[in-house]
Each structure stands twice: as C-alpha cells, then as structure tokens.
Length: 448
Image (tube, rainbow, N blue to C red):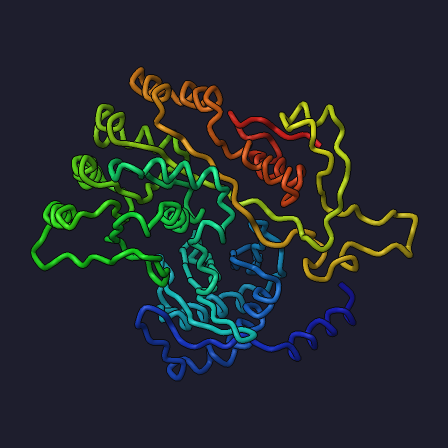
C-alpha cells in the first residue's frame, strides 16, 4: 500500500464511528484509572482494530505473536484474512488492554484467561468474548469472538432448516421417549444447533421443560424448571415426569454417569441436548462406551450435525447453465437448468471493466455474504441398528447412511447449490482437507 493510501485509510478510520466499550461481562470490573499508561498507549489502537473488524463483518479477531510483531487476522464468514501487524511491544499492549477491558488481569501471562466486553457499534449491541492463551517465550495469543445478542437464531425457519428435516426431528420426538442429540466440532455452534433441534418439535403440542442454562436465548413455549434445593437429577426428572412432561432440554452430555441416568429415564421422557463429538458416528461410538450398546439401540433416536458454508451474495452472484455431465457426476437432477457462482474477475486486458469490488459494495467484492448451514442426520433405523449391534464400524455406519439415503453434509450442501444459495466452488472448498486435499471418506466431491 502506498504511503498516501495508508494515510487516507487512517483518516477514514478517524472519521468513522468508533466502537463504544461499555464494561466487562460476567459481573467483573475494569479499573482503567489504575492503568493510565496502558490506556494512553493502547486504548485508541484497540478501538480502531475492533471498529475495523466490526465494519468488515468479522466474527472473530485473532492476535498472534510472530517474530518481532503481533499479527492480526479477521475471520469473516469462516475465512481468515490478514488485517495487518503491529510491532511486538505495541501488540503486547493491545493484548493487555483487551484483557483489562474484559475484567481480566493484564499482568498474568502464564495462565489462560477468558472474559467478555459489552460494546456498541452503529447502534447495535455486541459481546466481545475474549480468550487469552499463553504460548512459548512468555507471549500470549488472543482471540475475540464477536456476537450480536439479537442474532440469536434458534427458530428453524430463521436458520434455514428444510421442512423435511423438521418433520424428521418431529418424528424422532413424537412418542415423547428417547434421546435426540446435536453434535459438532468445537466452536461450531452446537449449542445453537441443539436449540434449533428442540424448536423443530412442536412446543404447542408437547409439554417441554428446560434444565439447561441457555444464556440470553429466548425459548418459545418452553418452561424453565428450577430444581429444588437438595433434589438430585434423578429426583428432578421424576418430578418433571409426574408433571406429564414430554420433552426435556438438557445441559451437554459430557460424562457417563449423567448420560446413563438420562438413558434410564428415556422410557418416560424424551431428551434433547448436545454431545461434544465431531461427527454423529463419533457420538454413537461415545455413547456406546458410556452406556452400552443395548441402551443405545433401545433409546437413541438420531444425531444431528451441521456445517456452515458461505452464502453467495444475492446482489452480485451470476447464473450459468450447468453441463449435463456435471449434473450427472454430482448426482443432481437433470432438470436443473440454472446454477449460480461468484462473478468472474475482469479481463486483464480490459482496464475499463469493473472490478468485483465495484460490482458489489455490499459484500466488498468477496463475493459471499454471511453463512448458511447444511445438515447431516444419523437415524437409528432398523438397518443402522443392525450395523451398530455388529460392532459400530465407522465405515459400515457411513455406508449404511448412504444405502438408506440419509441426509449427509455433502449431499445437503449440494441442495444449497441447487437452491442458488451457494456455489459449487464454495462446497468444494468447504469439504477439502488441509492444503487443498479432499477430506477423507467424504463424498461426493463436487467438481466445477
């Protein structure tokens, strides 16, 4: 970047509305008066960085130590972009300032700390969830997760859950018995997915209780149940059952003892929750280890997971007519006549042609705007139960999912392509492994 361009960008930042920090979350304090030198040196650079991140729609900010500097990256729609770097000394000050704003101890660098900052930008409230992690050499890596409390999408229609999947989950819970779980990798939004799964049921037909801490999420027609003092979980579930409950939303399934208790009660209640497993197959195998294969075969109804894929910008996506051979290779219906893709860059020999940035200011030339989920559901059908009873081999379970035409991430991603919501190139990118290699045991692999 030329010196004049850098100066112009700096002036734009100065003129732009800045983020307002409104204090730490979780009842903590941030005493800025006790750290005047830190505030003087680092508060303005921190405000500029966070303002820049919010203006670019970043959902994560990463500050990572590198030789002689702190590298800054913004993650937008799941893609990390370089956002500059600052000298090491200034970067350390910015990390300490962010920790101070979050009510953390800026001097503690050898232990992991987490907190949050309430903030506002362009009239919208944001939560900045701060996590500092020590690394070798006494440095720290800092991550900021940016959340808008109003973007609390737990209604299936807001998220984009297809109608047939909503019906499938309703079928799982229709007899008010059993276990229905959501799973996914860390930081993939499995709590939101489990709440969406809960709301795929019909809370106006069933009596639904909640035993989990759902934060600022608002559950629709779901009654919070506060266990009385001295009542253990078994006694609490017995009382809920006596109140003619149908469904109970539970805290995460994280230990064998509690999970066994829930499986024992699933003859009387249907439980919906989450389990910290990367895939539905891994979730089934974990449950077998915890409660035994017989309980899994008897009570588990299904496991849901999802994957977020970038959504094509509606204002600049371009339609094209797909080759029939491409449709056949991907297993798409031959009657599909139009798909969409990102606009192509201008010809190199035409300096007058508009750039992608000029074609669409809304997406800033990416040309994707936001993300949309594709879904996968492992159903405990009779055929799947036979595979699980025979040893729950992952490859055999995956093959059974294909054999029964169960919804898989890859297949559902192609549904989004057909609906014009994303591109084949984005699906291919999303399902590639490290360094561009296709992820193992994932198919079909779209080829543009």
